[in-house]
Amino acid sequence: MQSAFESWIGRSIVLRLRVQQVKVTVHGLLLNDQNDELVVRLDAGPDIRVLKKTVLAIEDLGLAPLSGAVCPQRGCGFLTISAARGMEL
Image (cartoon, rainbow, N blue to C red; front, side):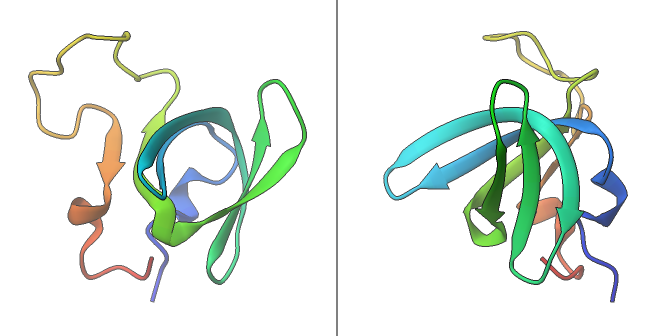
């Protein structure tokens, strides 16, 4: 089964993550999709490994809405985990 993240490899992205009780936004380049992790090269820093279970949403950096903007269309250039049902996460 294809991973929900596979088509994002090599693209500049914004990841929305939940780390314990905190929501975090990470900007970078998705390098690899491994078993339970994603490898991301941060815009300003090293490569990091992100647990897939912490990902709330992934957005194409070129399509990411401006901070505080409301996207009127469902989807709007990002994949939420609920939209990825039926795909391996």
